[in-house]
Image (cartoon, rainbow, N blue to C red; front, top):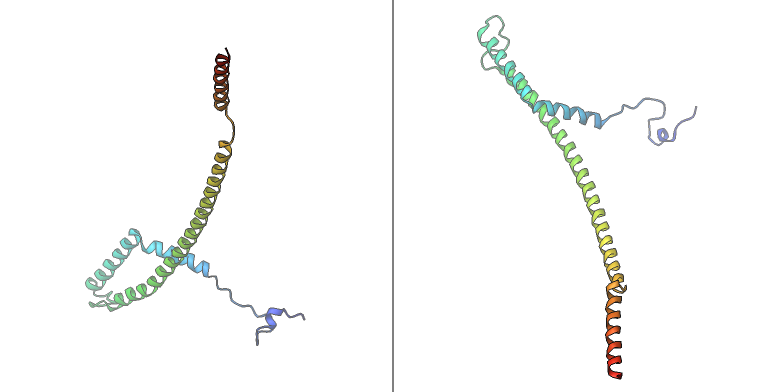
Amino acid sequence: MKVRDDQVSRPGRVGTTPIPVYDADAIGRWSESIARFLGTGRYLAIQTVVVILWIALNAAAVTLRWDPYPFILLNLVFSTQAAYAAPLILLAQNRQDTRERALAERDRLVNERILSDTEFLSRELAAIRLRLEAVVTVDDIQQLRNDLQREAEELDTGQK
């Protein structure tokens, strides 16, 4: 029987016993869906109806009183709900913060690349402008031609 190296490196774990897989991402997605539901008006409406029915049945129906007036069981239900809802909401917020941090980092990298490209293009434009200053244009040639014609005319008039 061949034993895998990773099983040998862990003392007391030689064999083929399955290791339970913990998928943190699945739990995170589940917590986000619960946090999204807990933050809706639909949830508040359902919870309000349940509380009203609970109190009405325990206050009015004498034979159905499973939680008499101080409604200790209802308080326990709310406490349990809060004990689980708060960490789920925090987990969902942490995941959202992680996504926002990754998005901000990506935006920073894109902005950095755009800045680098802009600086490169600015340098290239400056180099092109410097090269164009040394290039003779049609206007320059016409100006030189006019100057030469004027000089030639002055020489011709001066020799006569």
